[in-house]
Image (cartoon, rainbow, N blue to C red; front, side, top):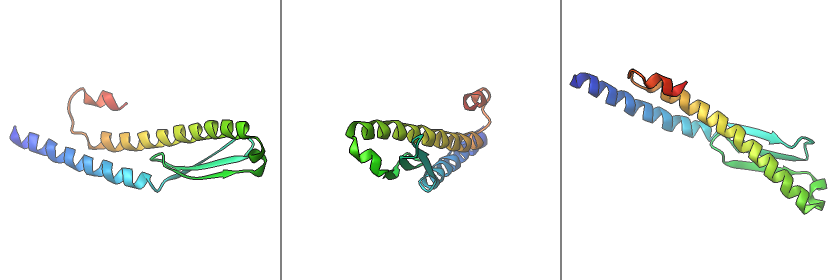
Length: 108
């Protein structure tokens, strides 16, 4: 009985370490999102840190339009990064979970 518990604890600790390693790796995964007309480009990491924003000169003439572009494009970039982040971390967590009956349905 204690061997099973110790084995599970070791597996959980190993999984925690893999999750941390995955988070660090996701800092290096860059995603690019653009406005529909390519006037605004955002680069973001899979951990949702904005790395760069490129704004076409045409958008600098209309503050309200620029604000709208920023909101839409940043939200799309964050959504894309969140999907990648969650998928990667869920895969690591699922792979590292001990075989506990009923728990497998949580990661589907």
